[in-house]
Amino acid sequence: MDGVAGASAAAEFQRRHEARQKRVQARHPRLGRFLLAAFDDPSSTTAWSKGAVGEEQLGQAFAKKAGDQLRVLNDRAIPKTRANIDHLVVCPSGVFVVDAKRYEDARPKLQVTGWPFGPRREWLYVGGRERTKLVEGMHKQLSLVRDALAHRPDVAVCGVLCFVDADWPVIGGSFTVRDVQVMWPKKLIAMLGEPGPLGVDEIADVQWELHEAFPRHRQSG
Image 1 (tube, rainbow, N blue to C red):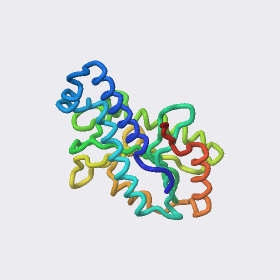
Image 2 (cartoon, helix red, strand yellow):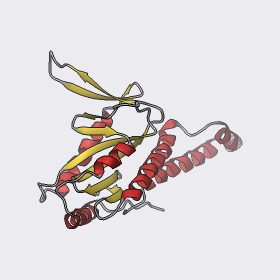
Image 3 (tube, rainbow, N blue to C red):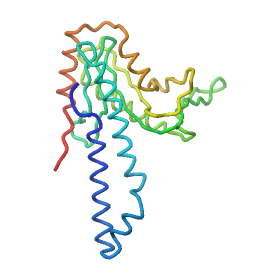
Image 4 (cartoon, rainbow, N blue to C red):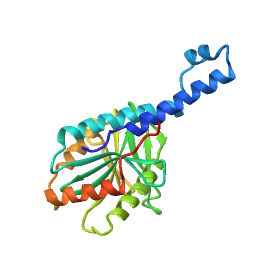
């Protein structure tokens, strides 16, 4: 295990939370404390806190299985941007780029339009709301990771949206949307343990190359 799962999201929540406190107290010197006590942070801020919890939970699940055949890089910086990759996992079957999402009690679903009478189009819905932008974001991460491993064309690079605390059905539930797999932590852990072509030495080498391409995300301050 390398890196702290959820660190970037937790830091971003804290930054926004403190900025709001300063902003409200500056605008309302007398009532600022009352307003802050009476009204919670906006959802755009609390989403970072929830996201951090989801990443932490998934990171803890990885930690229980991590070893020579399952190496995990948490909270990796994307150079020249403020963005990060939640988890990079190297295992016998290849490299998995994992984006942890925490939508409590909301059910992820695949919706297909067009087919069979027109071009097939796939959409991701979570809790009844269209969230295909999550898939698009994953494809951007996949492109960066594949570029970093371009000299290793035989190493498979796969994308996973892992929903923590979601409303998954008792039977089935996982699916693939636009070549990105969607599942829950337990199923992901089981999949990462499947056999594959990469040996222990190659897994270690790939982990180090990914560490150099995507270093630990450093927080300012």
